[in-house]
Image (cartoon, rainbow, N blue to C red):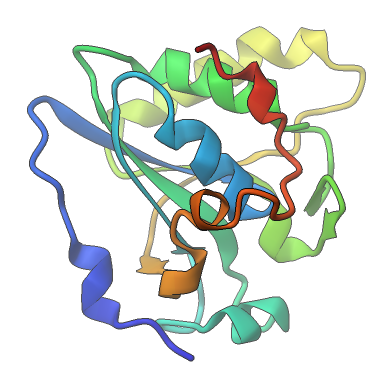
Length: 177
């Protein structure tokens, strides 16, 4: 099943909206976590920086696409800034793992931060340099400009909201009530 490529063009109207794309293993848990953060106005799950346009989940799992499972996070920068988003993100993943998070193994589960605003690259790079001494191994998180993003199939969107007992490698108890 392929998603409609026009669906990924959905752009919610948010004052002071910025967006960042986060890959941290299976996208279900990352999406569930970020959808609950104050200042985050919209999330969706999809496939980022793929070699093949509009790939299906099945095709992504073959590793032929070079896509990564990714979460689009649209946020109001008057409520939450990129550094706070990065702090939350690196608090729920292990950036030293190569092509895996939790039980998920494969290049589509690599960690990554993908930006659309070129000014964000310096913020991301600076943040990684700041946290690197906290880890015993080098940070392997991919930092790159987003080249494309295709919305994943509808059954993946808000998956854990629809399936509360579904698999999740993210510790959702970290969310502050």
